[in-house]
Image 1 (spheres, one colour):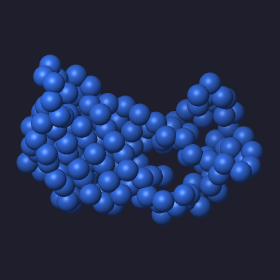
Image 2 (cartoon, rainbow, N blue to C red):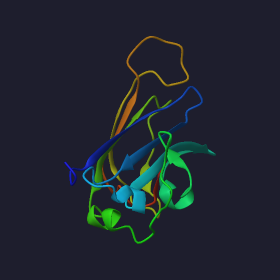
Image 3 (cartoon, helix red, strand yellow):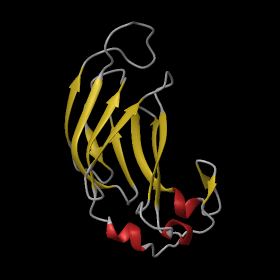
Length: 152
């Protein structure tokens, strides 16, 4: 499964934001103790009339912190494990609870992405019904790289 693409599911809070993390290592050795791992943060944040989905490298940003209470100790910026899975992509992003159908979904830099919207209840509503879904297909972003997607 090391090379399988990822599906990210973003469940928006009542405020319309979200945050999550993913930690990956080879699962076979103790090379994570030498900084051979991938630790990413995914954030959904509001900026003016847009929702931004973004990914950033937590290993580089927080090299002395812990993942699930386990101290990592070090981070190797040349990271052979990250290079080994550098071509692993995000194949789909599902955003749950948008308040309205977007007018556009673009990767930072302007390329329009392929998406589908299913109407439903937004994350801020107090109704009992199926939540709205935005499905972004093959956004052409990599699990090991920083990226941003704008939802207008």
